[in-house]
Image (tube, rainbow, N blue to C red; front, top):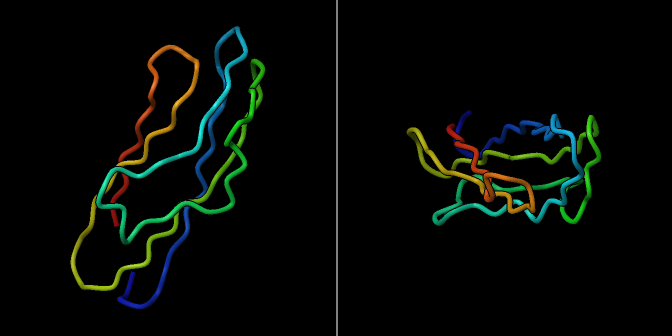
Length: 88
């Protein structure tokens, strides 16, 4: 992605288990820039088995070169918090 442009990726979380769980807000570990969360349809959502929710991660670089970050999502499911690696 060119400096000054942006790219957005949809992230889907699906409950593949057998019990309900509730999600928190996706939060980037510092430094978050040049990544941001938008269209968050997961914060506070309780997913029943087989149900999904989505949020978007946008990459908006302000300097050339690669960038990495991680986003964590708290929940009451085993393995809390859940972390996703991002790169752009």
